[in-house]
Length: 122
Image 1 (cartoon, rainbow, N blue to C red):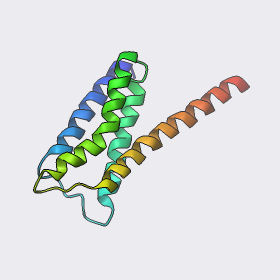
Image 2: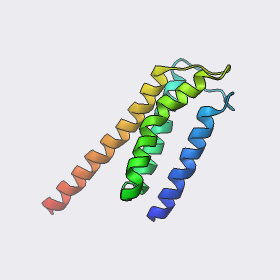
Image 3: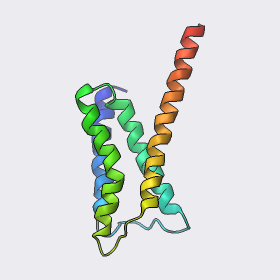
């Protein structure tokens, strides 16, 4: 898949993520069982980081603003949610979001090392 498609997917995903983060009342129920909210935070930010690494990581002029946004968004969205009467601030939600980000970075790092190892061995 071309980088431009990954870039477009990342920007669209980021807009959807921001929308759902700041919407006063969530459009769907994500509290059917204990911890479901944390799972969704983990998956949402892991997905965003995946798209970022697939598309924008090679664009030097995007790296700093994108990394800043990715690292700021979990806490900023929780802070904005604290201002809503329907939502509440949760440091654990931010922590789950950061775990999602870090897990994808780790997967990309390990896979890159593995691919480089395979190339050297061949």
